[in-house]
Each structure stands twice: as structure tokens, then as C-alpha cells.
Image 1 (cartoon, one colour):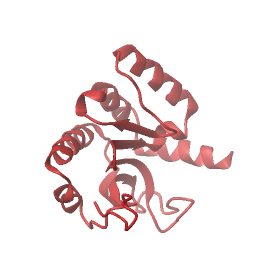
Image 2 (tube, rainbow, N blue to C red):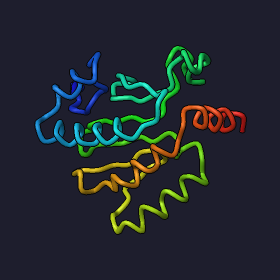
Image 3 (cartoon, rainbow, N blue to C red):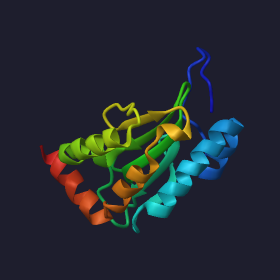
Length: 159
């Protein structure tokens, strides 16, 4: 990960997921590779993986949703991102951010796992793999089709 002159982390300039992972310290690389394997095993067909906003991104390609992301239409619609930050790693689940009902259900289910949820608006922060409720995240991913995600996104931006 690139570091600014002020010592703050900057977005990676990696062009591929493999390059991004190779730039990480070994402990972070192994952890993110494990999370990535879970994502790839559970994400529904239609989403694509690549680099987006300096992170590993999972998104709805323009071939499915030509309008792209409303904030930057040249970018495909973001769905999920995985990143190594300065003090933790993050999993950004945009599907939770745009759907308060799903977010509430997800937070309740997480609480039932007994694990502490360290979460911002859509960002689940973790320092070690055991911090994550991987089965719950996998269930969440399996429960969202590309079409359903695009529909919920369109409804959210209309508000």
C-alpha cells in the first residue's frame, strides 16, 4: 500500500487483485485471501471482481447496469469492497448501506454470533479473521442477486 508523505495510507495503485494482494504484508495478505475465497465461493453470478477505488472490488458491470455508479457513471456499480487500511482491514458492504431493513437484520444476526461488530455505515472493520462472522457474511452474499441489488440501489438513489 502506498503511503503519503504525511505517513497516511493512500489508495493502492495496483491494477489487478493479484498485484494488490502481493503488495500487502504477509499476515494481511493471508487474511484478505481467506476473505476473498469466501466471497468468491458465495457471491452470486453477474457480479465481477476487479480493482475499484484502490481496493478489491465486486461490482455490477456496465454490461448489466449501463448507468454505472451515480456518483461516477464511468465506474461500474460497487457492491462489495475488501481493503487493507492502516490499522485494520475493511469489508465494505454497500448492500447494507442502501437497505436499512437488511442492515438491521444483519446487525441482529451478527450479535447472535457473539462476535463484536465494528461497523461504520457500510464498513465492517476487522484486525483478524476471527473478528468476522464469515458464515453470516456468506449467507448475506448468497441472498443478494445482481437484479435485486440493482433494484434496491435504484430505489435508494430515488429517495
